[in-house]
Image: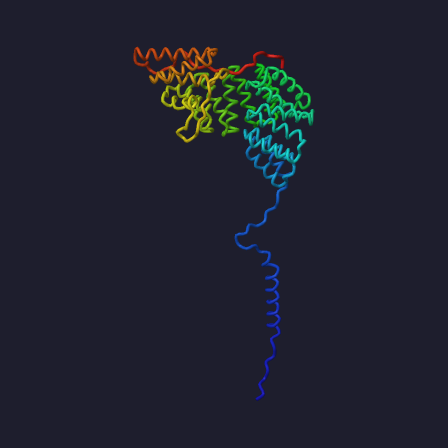
Length: 423
């Protein structure tokens, strides 16, 4: 009847109690800190100052697109600083993204409507889009807000020169540009944009060797800006130093391979020295970079003509004369034939010449007549129009000759100032 009671196992009780307490601790403090599957772990936030410094370093290395990306990240981190929007706009201009640069400058103006640099950079971006009147209004406002803004004076030089080239500005604008370049020099003689602006006005006034020296000085400050090599190459090309021009354009192409302009200028340079095969290759590369540009199509048509690719030449040059939808799906805008556009005249008379070679004289003679009626003062174009007529007359009398070059050929021409004031 009397059952012996077993003694409690205190070791087991204590162990179980410790396990319960440990489980409660883990459930409350450890499991709560573990993120569920699929949720990304938090990353440290990079400060705007760090991103800006990174962007400036990338810009100095010529890595414009990565620099733009870093500036955009800095703006996301700190959106209310107009200076960052302005820095982004400046790099966007160098990268050829002019509409985006304008937008960034306008964002800065929303934050500070009286920011001189924001007006200056917006003016610069507008000038690259051909909006010279609006650009001049903005640059004057920038200088009203800060007369000692060296960058604004430098940008004003380019706006005035480009306005003159476009036909909107008078030659007085060139003289004003000379004055503005000197003001920029006095305010900031070591600024890249100061040397660039000074080089531009020297180039416009025919002082090509001096212009090259200014562009070289700008390159010494930052050797990774493609546009500076384009400018230097233009001047070497005008001086007939073609090997140096090719080197400069090739460097520009390496720094900004998406830009069709280095390829275009390489194409024209090789054509000038008679290397038509290379000229055609670079013309094709330019079109590949921007297939919707009618001017690039016209240049390609000229190079096809020089290489005796008659049907291909007709196709590309027809976009200049007629416009229309290209085979690769781009809507091409025709370019009107008007005085003062020697390159466009070249496209038209080359189109007429190749039509005559293909015995399509009905249209070829219309082109010849159009040239004579619209640009009678362009001696080269009129001479080629007469050659079109002569060739069509020969076609009536005998079969077309073996493909070769015409007696009259297109030549290079560059805009020149009507006078050359001392820069």
